[in-house]
Length: 409
Image 1 (tube, rainbow, N blue to C red):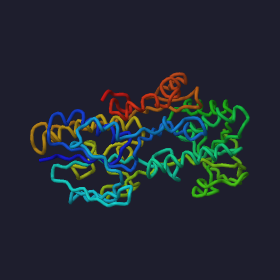
Image 2 (cartoon, rainbow, N blue to C red):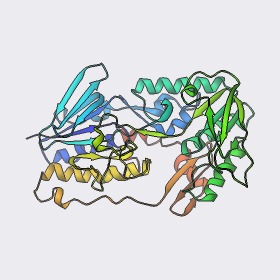
Image 3 (cartoon, one colour):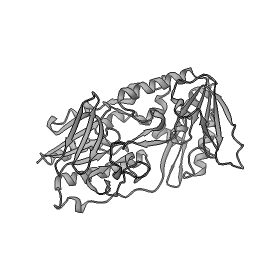
Image 4 (cartoon, rainbow, N blue to C red):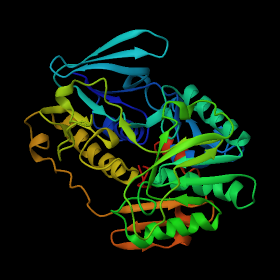
């Protein structure tokens, strides 16, 4: 009997899981088929989106990598690439309803040995192209559109000082502010960029490096007007932006109540891509309730990996660790079946790593980060991340030769 693994999502978790099963597990059984369901025809290397959103900084060939050619090396009867999105999952009937990119409808039916992997990730709020949008074409169009807006604006406000916000502010600062071409402002809702879970000197370094690039950093404030809906529209030059003070800080001056700028770039917030799932699988925030066996609670044949799950914060390092672990669970289940030695009863639980592992670029030559309780040197962040933002290994990743964390595959 064919044992089907359906993977929903083709990005940093779905692609390496599919490759592992086809490259390794399929050589140990003749009864495996992998179905990869996703609307994107290309892998979007969104790690580099903070640089790719700027005009003429990074071409599409560095950001988008075709998926289909990398799977052509496997026997055609062992895999299928389905271009579409899951619209509904019925865990009790073992079905997934898929809406194709061409508008067609399809229901994928499983037998009792079928396994599903939810690897749908998350989306940036406000429809920003820091994550995949509905299709590859839509993501490219949004990136190009924002690049045009950035090119025409003389003053830009980056709203939100998390990892994405400080990286974009750094790119804009190095390209425009330090040379006097544009005014760049970063808005942080705390007294320093990043959140209080990071070492204070890491946060201070972020602020200092941005100011070195002539980025104006406004703290203890958030944008309240224009609304997030209008920030994605073509801006009116010299728009009035209203700020609201958040937590007053005796060490920081009170923020201004208004700013004038041509463009606002919102960088805050993620939304899990789980709207197609029954609410019984989700927590109050919309994330899948994920066990340490990397399953959806109460469903032994629904695996959950990466940003869609609630076991760890949405972060590449966590998604990679879960990917490496889940392929062993999947392989044991495919090869061992239910209730037989080497199957479910002997599997090792996933242990989430509690320590912080974080690196942020601040322009093309500097950065900051933290591993555990240690602050990472700026030069090391540049060497490991800032030079290429991972684009030097993206093609190998899509070909199934390594994971996001560099593990040989």
